[in-house]
Image: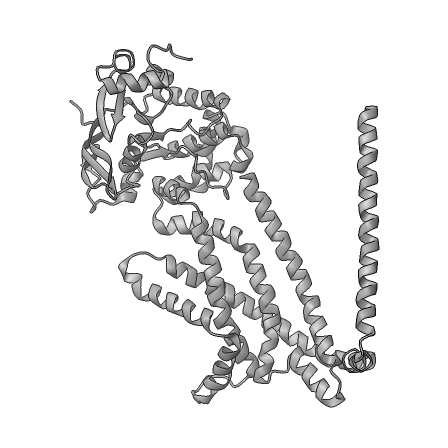
Length: 252
Length: 275
């Protein structure tokens, strides 16, 4: 069997006395889409931030292509270059044009020439449907457009693993679709993705594996069908009935 | 336009005209009262003669303007040095890693010292103390020494303004830069500092308006700037009008800078609102 792209073992994260992640195990194989669901505060975002090494972990290990990147002796900047992260609140750089946002990492971290990076950046922007916005500033764009730019920015250096942290939670309802459609296309094209979301219909459509987090642990995981339609755990059932995810047909 | 809209527009316009008229009348009344109160005071004729003497003022103007030209040159050079040193101090304070501890500590100590030290005392210490050491290479020129003291004190203020700007950049921007693989230095240079510089422009301009008038303090070291020139004119004419002339010139100098600061503040506010 191939080494998983991402492998998390016994991950523990505390903020002071509060235990946010309490021994998380997770495997993500290549071309897989893993969706993390769970109530606010269940640890979904923290898990993604720990994987991207934006937070120090207290215990456990994170393997990226078999290498333990949670070791403090590992060069975190180098490890992050294999991962792309998209945030709930976009976090675009407001003082740079859309194109410069997308090409920043290729130019500065990967030392590509401006011309190369721009060409690739424009391709990506065309792919997310924003070719004509390349020279605009982020604050002139709608939330959905900004989030699509953020996705293009995360794809600009072709990461092994894409981490999506509730990327539609800050969007107006009518803008959610355009972002999810894009993620759906990425999933279809074989990207390896871990995403935290509250969009149960979308999870059902694209997820190979759905993990339900509760109290800092993955207490149930399996295929989307299994976890969302026929959950085994009471907590999962309660959560799904609250968010209205169980039994709802996919919203395409 | 419908009749309703036309009627409402006419009403708004009439209100606007009325507001303008009231402002005009109240301003005129206020000015007349102020003028009457001042000129009817018992000491007015003497004050008018010794502070607002047209002839003395006019005769002292060329010398004071000469002095002001010196102030302007000092201002320009000091501004540039202060910007460079202030930004460097702020940048040093953001350096991470144990190697930089001595530099960080030095920067903190510097800011603490020169932000607390009254400018006039710094001027005396630098202006009279440094040449007193009789070291080779230390100039005796009061303009250079005065400018040096101004740079010392104002760099500490400007460093704090820059630091506040750096801290005002939201941590999510740092997270985004890190997630893209940028290292700390690249994040500072490409993401944090450009945003910080934009945000602190109004505060910096405000500090420079203050510097503009504090440039007049180099006169205490004997530099013949506008203030010193006015002092000399006062001493020869036995009339205080040259001080008023010098004061008005400083105000005239500060007004454009103040308007510029206002404009920059407004622009920053509308920008942030758009974000």
